[in-house]
Image (cartoon, rainbow, N blue to C red):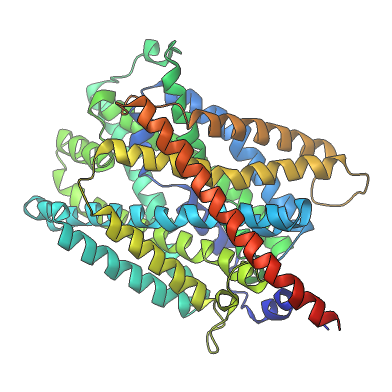
Length: 471
């Protein structure tokens, strides 16, 4: 007899993700060009921060994903790992932060999609993105389409992710090629002095956003029971996908720095600004529209990847009875967690509607992004602490040596702690520092408090159920 409902229900999930599906999933999940303008606006210093994050956060992330997925295979990823290593509450808290962050991250991606997609229709149609009714309707339509495709199964939904991964690689590569052409023909606008580390401590706040931009290698393991031969497929896919992501991010950041002065880089439309300006400089202004089309496909893939992946967290929490059990239901025909997908999409749609109440300003966007950084990185604290705990154990096993696991754990943990801390440092886009700090602290405590409430309420209900099952 299965130990619990989780083990009984999971074999019904279909293994639809192969190696190249995973590589493209990593590219579309990790490389979000939307965060590059926000980071690049801090100037050439961000290149050093990128290198620090790639070595001390991204490399350990790859080690952690491969090691923990090898030791603890199954659906749930960060939820399952924290649960096995630190107990049920910590597993739930890790999964809760991962899921709730994506509830309001997906709407920002949908808004970004509409803002870029209007460029495809030409300059005369770009004002549509400023009309709340059009933007909301287009965002909801895309969200509904992605839900339907993912309910039909990863065998269908993964093609949105795959096209998004291909689109991400194409747009980042094209962006870099344009920058190289402009630099060759008109000279380099960034000088060696621009790379000097200034004394302005507020610039380190970009490290948190950079680490936020580098999450995503763990997403495949959230769908661990849907990977074909995960022990053989996952390590190579993580390595290849990680290298591609690092190259694309560094190239895109350098390109923006070359194309635009940092005080002219918009946090919301910087990518299209750079492309339009560089394309006009070299006489290929027509390139902006097809670039926007490919970038729109990429953004749709980002939304699909995070919607489908993070919805697996409430699915496994429902199976464990720490959230309503209905969330753990599989579709009778397509064997997908359709209830969790619909609930996730409904909450994202609600948050999207709320975002249209009142004026949207740059300061609100930056505050929301920093709060998302904190929530997103909490599961990584558990992930890296788990590596340290594994390295301290006496038993052998796993994919890497104890020395490698220990080094990756400490590097990742210390970098993540620093990234969470600097997320509370207000950037130059913030006018009211005290209001920013109040929003950050209150928002973080609110999400953690709600997680504790759900866990203790449902754990009290779970005890009589477990006692009855043993009779």
